[in-house]
Length: 230
Ligand code: DU
Ligand code: SF4
Image 1 (cartoon, protein in one colour):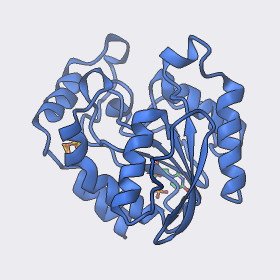
Image 2 (tube, helix red, strand yellow):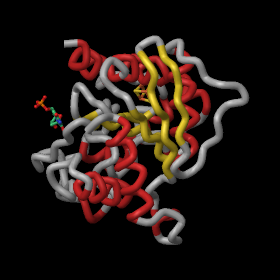
Image 3 (cartoon, rainbow, N blue to C red):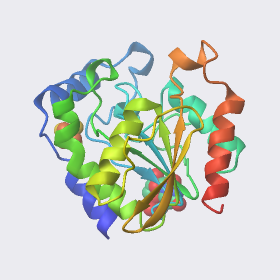
Image 4 (cartoon, rainbow, N blue to C red):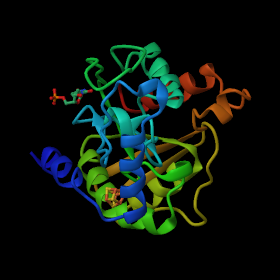
């Protein structure tokens, strides 16, 4: 089907030299704690329910997280926080994700990232973001057939998502609606209206400092669930 074809095509993309080098170097070098594990080391497509009601959008996979497991937002501390929350509210079948063979499943939700390859320091360049945009756009387009709520993790993911929606013909209000935790914006798209929700990124920077708490994360995902009719 369309999604499988997209996954197959993106999985061999080498369009960004800096990211190709980084994703492969990390996969060969490996972090000590994962020395005995295989690393994916390639582009990471969206993952989860193929007909999602909720999309969870971020910026890019993590070098020792998604770049290792092959599944975006898994295998690192941010993923641990996210999946614990998804499990608490009933969208994931287990609270943790260790590796790609762990039977983890999402129901009603799908995770996508604006950039498919892990960037150094978790920061793709604007050029890399733009190079990956056609993959993101197509993935978003396929998901919009069913999705009614999109949760954006962090401001970078939020900005990329609004740009992706705009490229698909969505009407983004001017001035651009602002990012914030638990903000909600209704966005008309050619495939129907969707609600975009902001959520602070579950990175250690936010979770260690208490800027993002478990109840705050659960509340945004629960709201998305309600909006999506789940
Ligand atoms: O082979 P498959 O059942 O289509 O699943 C592919 C992949 O997506 C697998 O890692 C499970 C996950 N997944 C999911 O999380 N939720 C679904 O509803 C369907 C598949
Ligand atoms: Fe290709 Fe995107 Fe990876 Fe760049 S970031 S190499 S465009 S998949």
